[in-house]
Image (cartoon, rainbow, N blue to C red; front, side):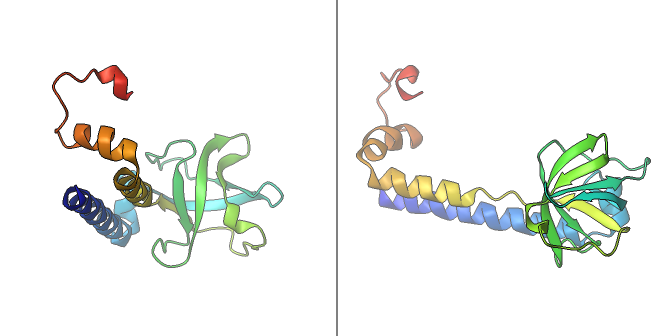
Length: 164
């Protein structure tokens, strides 16, 4: 069982590396390409900052669009998504403009109001999976119940509802 769990953990780490490389290639693309693909918003101008609530509101250009969803993690930068950036949560269009929540922006003064860019953020849940794999090997329930189902070694008589 240890070999299978080790292999599974290696696959999670490999997937994490591939995901990071994919995002790095995305961030390295020229800004117009990132915008045209719907993976970035550019030419954002700060219209208001609510320091108390850690909200930043932008006046977005009307011709741009992105495939961002509400509460999605993004990178806010001056077109430097691999250098100096802030992790923000996308709130979408609000009555104050295009809004983001920026927990790391508490005491920051945004002296530059224009030229801001929002890029997709890397979503890495591999640590969660690696902890689950470790727990699978350490806990009796994992070894006796989950492992056989996960690796196709369970009896054919198993009822799916038992494992929900």
